[in-house]
Image 1: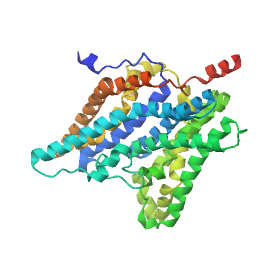
Image 2: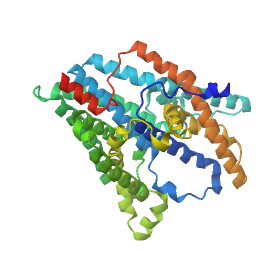
Image 3: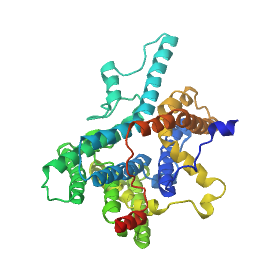
Image 4: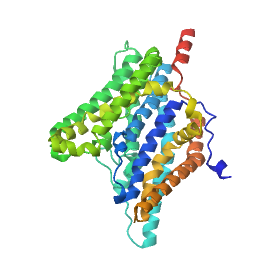
Length: 416
């Protein structure tokens, strides 16, 4: 009975295994980072953690590739950008993300009020004027967000990217010369977002003294509108340069370069190496780097992984043994639910209610944390997220997916 309750049909839909690996790796890195909270003073830090990239940045690039690819292909298929395309794009995105988010957000608010009422104290929620911002993703639009539900900083960046990117593409389509091909308009839109956001960060970084630190750019919407654009750039390459994208030699080379750059960038920006910047007297340069060039470097390095991972269509060899592939696909499917549930709902409101009195207790809390995250996320996905996502298929038009194999699409174009 329990097996049936928690099992997901991971084999029914056509999926790209390489992209599932990326999504699973991203969420596992995020949850692993948050699990260390349970250890308190008993966590001494693991060296290998410093070579891992930020899982959220990987999510940004993957999301940009998938969502940007859908937008580009929808634009190409229709031959123009209009209100109908825009509304359908938003409808499908928001059916995918908003119901789960509002369910968890409302649950956290109700829980905070109930606990305050039960204990006879005032609730710890932000002021009403700040709390309402969470419902329209303004909690970190131009400043760092409050301590309540802090993990939503990245979701706000994604949601605003879903708004600004298609609006900008629509604007470009209307303003740029009519003789411009759609390919050039798409590239101009992507570069405008990337260059514009980087110039914005650079100007602020130059104006504010280094003593002010990194300025919290990582989690501020207006400073991170380029976050998913690097993945959109990868989707652009797949759409308009299919032969290059499908070239196995280039895929392997880009994978090697991407992995190397990602690991180096992660390590040079890690807490472990921070003391060496201070000792070498180059800490100001490190702060300036983290304010500015770090974001495009980590974004582009991860974008280089996309051709190979997109070409990894199915699990083979050792990946299909011992249920590894099934586990990865499962984690990929429930990743959004894991993202919403792992920190504030489970770690803060459940695990952290019990003190970490010893090394053993700390690791027991970590184990319980992982069990709760995996089980609750699976149930949320199966009984709420998936049904709501299926509902959108009846309320919106289907979109062309960027995950369609390149060679298939190329041959179809030849036939036409």
